[in-house]
Amino acid sequence: MAQSMASDRPDAAPAVSSGGLGKAVGNRLVIIVPYLWLFVFFLVPFLIVFKISLSTTAIAMPPYVPVFGLEDGLSGLIASLGELTLDNYLWLTDDALYFNAYISSITIAAVSTLITLAVGFPIAYGMARAPTSLRPTLLMLVILPFWTSFLIRVYAWIGILKPEGLLNQFLIWTGAIDSPLLILNTNTAIYIGIVYSYLPFMVLPLYSALEKMDYSLVEAAQDLGCPPASAFWKITFPLALPGVVAGSMLVFIPAMGEFVIPDLLGGSQTLMIGKTLWNEFFNNRDWPVSSAVAVILLLLLVVPIMLFQQAQARSLEKGR
Amino acid sequence: MNTTWSRFNIASIVLGFAFLYLPIVLLVVFSFNESKLVTVWSGFSTKWYGELFRNQGLIDAAWVTARVAFISASFATVLGTLAALALTRYTRFRGRMLFSGMVFAPLVMPEVITGLSLLLLFVAIGLDRGFLTVTLAHITFSMCFVAVVVQSRLITFDRSLEEAAMDLGATPVKTFFAITLPVILPAIVSGWMLAFTLSLDDLVIASFASGPGATTLPMKIYSQVRLGVTPEINAACTILIAIVAVGVLIASVVNKSREVQRQRDEQAAQRT
Image (cartoon, rainbow over all chains, first blue to last red; front, top):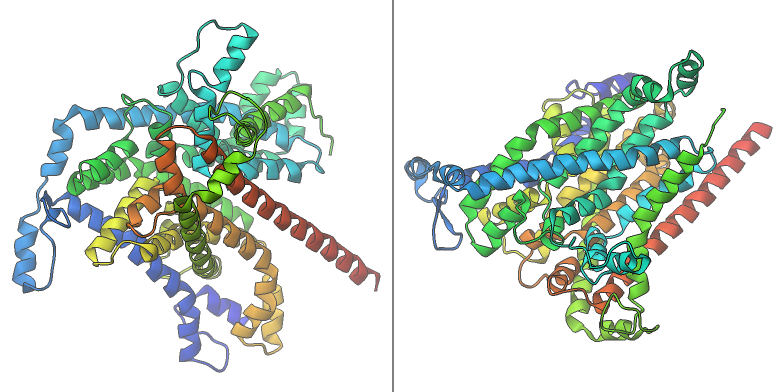
């Protein structure tokens, strides 16, 4: 018992007999090692991005100034701090391209999240209502596409959506259309790509929320004369809400910064911020501007990310 | 429980799964197409697979990817398991909020941001981009996925087993290896597999973090896809899908037999 109390409060020295200091360090290593790793490879890089977003572009390697160094001592460090500018952010507000890219990313991500929710909900609901013996198989069938490469799944749609592709061949064969539809390289293709790629991320949290639901509530409501549609909005949907929030964030946040889908399925006129950042970095080689693009994207995502983290933490608390 | 599985439920599941699987099935089917035109069927042929094995660039990339995935998945599993232990066992320590934020945020962080920030770190500390940097990048984001998988197993873990072992005089380290590890092992194994496939898959972060000498398979496929759809890429994708499918199949069979064994043990225990 003493040990379990000690492990609840690692700040206090472990109460159990031998070891003493050595064991306290051992206990803490469990925290310290992953903590340090994430600190160095996740948090520090963001600080560097932030710093470079305030630097000036230069034709050099690395292509920005100032570069902090301790060679010049403290005075050098302070001098280089003075060279930091907000020019890159001003540049972003000057050029309508960036503003439009942010707006269209938000729109595309929001609309595709709603479509994914509309497509995913009936699937998750059907799975939750399936006979108990079938559920593990259905669950595995939802997870399986997630194990196949994202790039491959997006690539598969090129062959389907292009003008002489399989969808158009099929529609012309059935006589539904006379001339091929232009879907590839439009926003429609991006919506299809995002909904397809992120559907499992929506279905899984929805399913876990719906599976725990007590269906006798719906039956009771219907027995009391509540029409099915209104029983859905009054009972099923509110109870599924944690799953709706978690699923929506799992789709919305990565979709905002998506690069592969707009690049392969979208046209040249499609603006999405992930693609803009990529082009700025790899084609224009402008590191400070692409860092500024990243910082603003991150700021836009802070609220959704915190929502996601809360939903995640809450579901884990419940599992305790 | 009284389940009514209506026609609507069945229809939405069937349509949903058709949507999820049809594109993959078509891709696999057309990798056996004889014609160079991917979308016009002209007869069965395996010649594109032959072409594939003569493409040295692709084979080199596949080898790099396999090594990166193996190494990064192994490190990520250790780090992710430690992170999961830290999150479930230590409910109060300084900076816990920040720590759990750092574990959960990479799960949803847009890859362009993660990739860019890691690249800038590597440049700042003067690390040459290549095999090592891709591996470090992959460890970082996949350890968070491992942490979540292992954490969900640890939460349902019965702590009284550990307490019993320690009351009987086992050291914490011995208790971990004798009691905790065997119980959470399935979660650790699936965490490793998840980390492996995530690394196998990743295009965006690898493109930022990699250097000239370490082109991974997704990078290679991507550069060819941009030039157009070819049956050769379909063949390469089919092989990747087949590897993953076989892996998942083996894992589920192993899990199933373990489950059956466990139930048999429990029944035997009850009988005695």
